[in-house]
Length: 215
Ligand code: TYD
Image 1 (cartoon, helix red, strand yellow):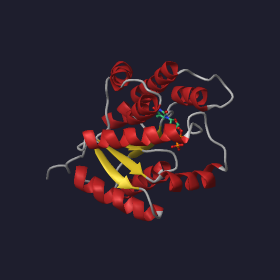
Image 2 (cartoon, protein in one colour; image 1 turned 30 degrees about the vertical axis):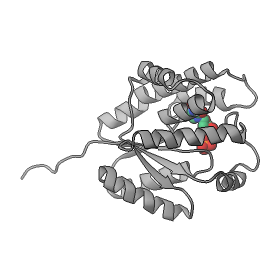
Image 3 (tube, rainbow, N blue to C red; image 1 turned 180 degrees about the horizontal axis):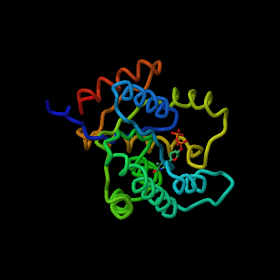
Image 4 (tube, rainbow, N blue to C red; image 1 turned 180 degrees about the vertical axis):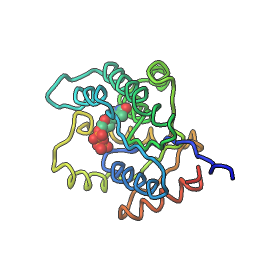
């Protein structure tokens, strides 16, 4: 009798603005994949390895340096390089699934759409830092700004990090950038309405991923 076919690992990223529920949905997806018997590594950006978590503190602290846009983009790319080399690629190589809360498209949306760097420059940093590694599928969670702000008020009790605390106009540019990436590359994104209960959003994600990549 032949051995059961093993399925290679997959790399799934969650993207979207603040308060859309990415962390909750990443956790629910990971649980659902584990129930299917898969090894799943959950991680986040910026962060995921000791070096990248150290850079996260530099980037998001409201008490440290106030980075310029180019330095900020380089720090995100450096954190991602460590994360990809030390955690994501080894996990994929052993056949695990990687579920990541934010990835490259956050740099494109925030440092690009929000702060004005060119998409080509951000992609060049990604080529240098992470050999251009892209997720197999990216789940873009969309939520109207009023509902997102209400969720954030519950979660953060008025405190926000150095980037989350930027203006409503900045976050509107970020949201528009995410939407444009998804429409430019429909094969790389599933776009999910993040309104409603977590279990409802989760069901939408499972259905969309199942038809896009087969779970
Ligand atoms: P985090 O608390 O992880 O996100 P959220 O508020 O959505 O739960 O904070 C990460 C912040 O960093 C968030 O404001 C988005 C920002 N960010 C970038 O600006 N560029 C990037 O490449 C990444 C990964 C995150």
